[in-house]
Image (tube, rainbow, N blue to C red; front, side):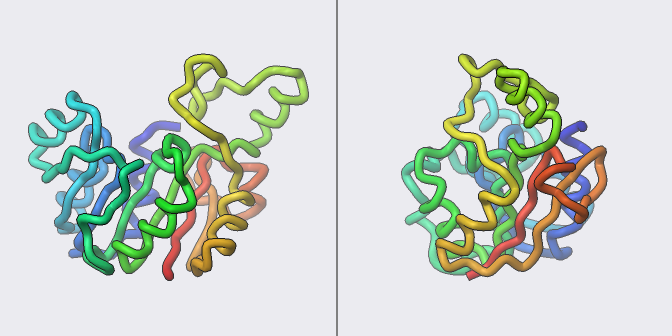
Length: 193
């Protein structure tokens, strides 16, 4: 599944004209897409120098910041939507960042590789850590601090006192609501306080 197909499905969750904060925005592709197709404004947060430069070259406003340090520079409900796409699994304090996502944004949209997707389960049954399009690294060189499942994020969100507005999976560029914990490579949650 390409990043573009995930990007398209997630973009549909963002209301047109929203003020967006994209946490761990990478090269700014998502925010640039939202600016172009949904008339959104906002900022990306990124740590890597090369990605910050790519954001600037795309015309995306970017702040260089380590997300493990938190979002204290932003007031409550500073943004309509806070995106956390393929970021949560890289952060040391996922619980704090989940709360911060919905504190800073009226809604938070979190997407990450679903470790419970059936090919991953099969790989573990064979005694090996999975290597897939969504989890492309070997166990010894992965940038992921942790892996999680679609079901795990729902449990964590509720434990943090958050409201799950919607949840589904993405597989083959399509939203999947039937058994996403088993059948989807990407897990998506739309959250609020």
